[in-house]
Length: 114
Length: 114
Image (cartoon, rainbow over all chains, first blue to last red; front, side):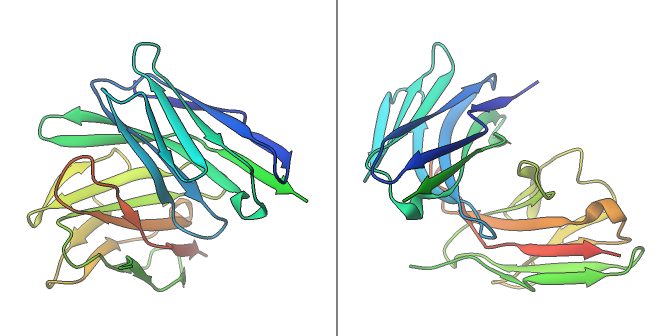
């Protein structure tokens, strides 16, 4: 069964500090992995997308890594800001015929405090 | 930047009634999705739609659910006879051609079944 597990469930950090969120998956056959940011009461917003051949991808202060061998990904946030407070969701897609099946993780709830 | 828009933002319906949730995807997108998120739980895939037909659906998407693209701009989710457990946020998403294109989410419709 395709599963995506994220850790930690929640995290509180001081403004300006860095943090790393983890994602482990058992989805196959792997197609791509995305990290989304979801503000409270809003829809998810895509941060990064990585395919099998990509090890790292950056989007401003967000850097995602992917190890397809161990089926792990991380999202590193540098110099956190108060506006980074949100849930961060790891989403893994499997190729199923000509289409994709997506599995969402449960998310990590990040709170950045002054 | 173009957005996916969803209406209404909040829908309150009596159990057993039919409800239609509406979405306007980004205009040049070809792939459309519905997801739901029960309060406090992870986002769950419901259905994907391409070329005027369902391409994938999850086990949640039973006979009570249907989707339609009635014209060139709207994409709707209908629940025929709502149940209490249908209470959730329903997110619509769309993406452009290319399996690694990001899905753009709307801000969701909160459905409350009484």
